[in-house]
Image (cartoon, rainbow, N blue to C red):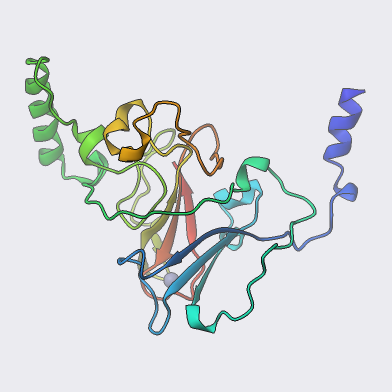
Length: 235
Ligand SMILES: [Zn+2]
C-alpha cells in the first residue's frame, strides 16, 4: 500500500538517530572571491548544511567554516555520504565555480520611497518607446541572479522584506554572505546569464539545488563576529 509506505517513510523509528549529517555546499577561496569577508589569517570559506528543511530557519543547520587553505593537508577524494537526507534537492551536484565580480543595485524595497518612485516612473516613460531596448531596473540592474557572495538582500516574493530586527544578531547587523537561488537566471534576468550560456538548452540550475517552490535562500553573517552562527532567510 502506498499509504503504508508513505507512513513508513515518516516513522521516526526508521530514521537514523540525530545528530543529522552535514554535507558540503560550497567552498570558496579569497583568491577567487576578492570580497570574501575572511577573518584575519583565513583565506577559505567552507559552507556546510544539513540537507533538511531546517536550513530555512534553524541556525544550526548551516555552518560556516573559515580556514587557512595551506593548513589543509589530507584531501578526501570521496567524501562520506550521509545515510539519509531530508530532500534530494538539497544535495548539490558538484560544480566548478568561475566567479565573476559584478555590481548590482539594491532591490526596490531597500531604496527610499522617493527614489523608488522616480525609477518606477522613469521605467513607465521608457515603456512608451517599446522599439528601443532599455535595461530594466528589476531584471537587469538590481539583484544579480544566481549563486553569489555578498550583494544585497534578494527580492522578497511570498513574504514581506526582512526588517532591521530580523536582520540582527547580538545587536549587530547581519549582511548577506551567500545567496542560494533555485535558478541561475530566468526570463526576467536573462541579461545576467553567462556569455557561455547563449545556448538556451544550458541548464539554469547546474547545482540541482532547489529552494522551496523556486525561491531563494540567503545566508546572512553577523558583522560583529564570524564565530556567530549564520542566519538564513528564504524569500
Ligand atoms: Zn552576532
